[in-house]
Length: 75
Image (spheres, rainbow, N blue to C red):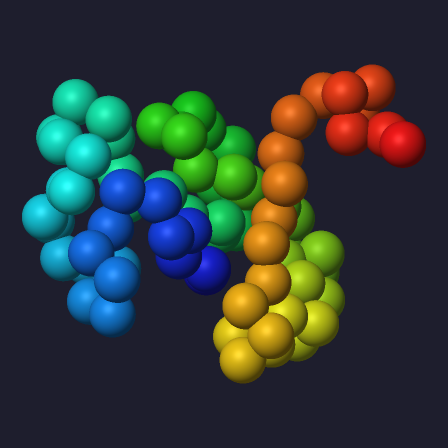
């Protein structure tokens, strides 16, 4: 799984419960294997695509994942 750096204290574990933007803004967002059920803001992928993503990401490059409707992201 991959922790998303949203509403977290920089440099702390993704498991830390402190939410700088406030608890009402959520947090604890991850990219993880699809378990066939709902999530609360997490992104899920099938096992092999997730493995490929994990292998492709280099934390030293500070990757950014952009989400939204494909029509809004194109171009």
